[in-house]
Image 1 (spheres, one colour):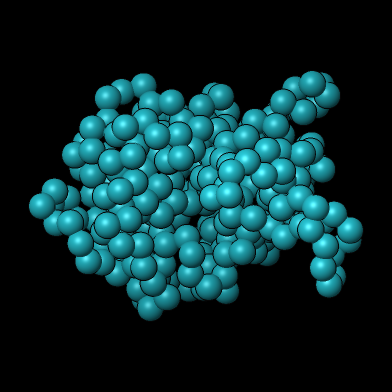
Image 2 (cartoon, rainbow, N blue to C red):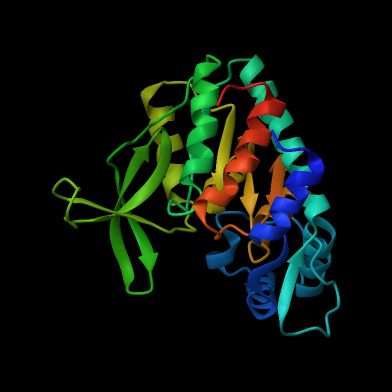
Length: 275
């Protein structure tokens, strides 16, 4: 495992924290849409409190370290690596508690191209510790909104991590009808997975780990959830502030997938899990 100083240096060098690729303009647009209760950025969360745009920005400045200046409307934004490190430790501690209790866990991602490896390593560690890693509703058909309108997707699992695939596509290395993994913000996949568990009489997860709608959708239903979030994903941080999400790690969620490996090693080691 890297020392704290080395991990901080890695966060900055990789762009996971420090100056990040998510622009100030993208952040402000998300905060404005969240204040307007636009479902595209609520990610399945129904906030209890009033969250005008300035309050959202103030929260994101507190939790992520972005600029809290409402007059700053353009250019790059930043994540404070100290906040990322502190949240990673809290994330690992929560995962470790679940492992010691052998709690059932559900992993899901809306970022399969970047974060699948991160969650897959955690799923392996939890499974090795004796935790049931749940994979409900595999193959379920989900209508999800895309820029082209509603399109059918399938719920699938890779290395015990849930994701959605575009339906009806074929290609080299894929079975007929097994489409490409898709980026998704929707809470529908986690709702479908949880409903299948409830209907089947199986154990519900004691913890959901992921991002986007996986975390907000679970937290909204009263299930303990935690995950990773970028500066343009205010719903997770609002859910954390309102007590419905346990831990949110602020980071750029779209850097190269191999850049997250040192974070995985840090979390596994602190949580007492094997890699």
